[in-house]
Length: 111
Image (cartoon, rainbow, N blue to C red; front, side):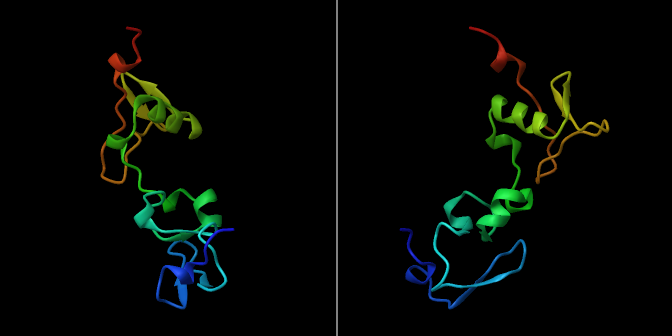
């Protein structure tokens, strides 16, 4: 069984930064809540939000390899043209830092 959050934080109540719901720390476990310090999410949020809301994650293309970038594009019905990822409406994908999504063509070549 997972530990209760009250065992690791002093607060009696924590708030999901995504949905703004309050949770009693002696009733919610680490399986039910994600802390940004664990680097799974970029904000403190409940597991419901983490599993269904991309706002809980910072998107940083520099931290993705080509495979992750291509999956990111495919999951959003985008496409790649001349090594740049585009949304289906023709706009470039941008991460939370404003950087465009570039695909490294050399990484995809067979050695």
